[in-house]
Structures are given as C-alpha cells and as structure tokens.
Length: 109
Image 1 (cartoon, one colour):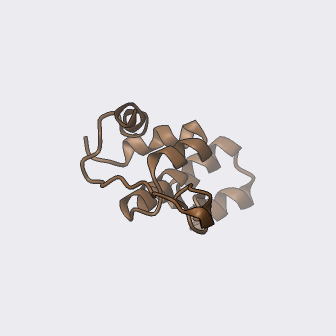
Image 2: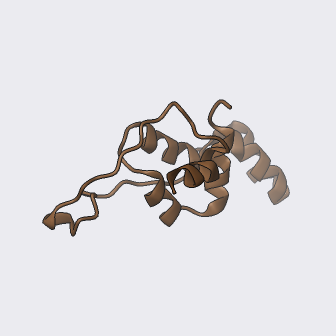
C-alpha cells in the first residue's frame, strides 16, 4: 500500500509532496510513463577532493570529503517526486535501497 511505501522513503509520510500516478494509454502500454528521467549521482570534485586525490589519500577520506560536493541519487529522486515527474512505486523499482533510505535525511520530520 502507498503508506507503507512512503514509510520506506520518508519514515513518516512527507506532506510536502503530491503523489501522481499516470493512467496510461496504448502508446505507453498503460504504464503511465512517457520518456525517461535520469536518477543519478553527480560528483563534482572540489579543491579539497583534488588535493586528497593528488596526495593519494585513503579511499575512506576521499569518500567523506566527496560527500560535500556530490548531488546524490536521493536528492535527484526527491526532486523528481516534488515535480510530479515520477512516483514512489517507480523509484522503489529502480533505485538501490541505500539511496531510498538516504531520502529520509532530506525531508523535515
């Protein structure tokens, strides 16, 4: 059910969203989707990241530093939900659960 699914994403239902589900048509095989949307992470190394890379710093140090300059999959997915361009069912189907769990940290409780 939708409430259980929303708990997976947000802990408690996030009231800042309106949830959409397309009716579908013969052209989309009644999926309700037209086209595709990218849900991805993008890391743009900052100066500190570059220094760590050049120094040959341990991977764990770079991962911690890179988190500050990474647009996460969870942020990308939340933006698509807020814009009504996807729905929780589709995100649950295609996203790794670790990214779904991170969405809980993005919304006010």
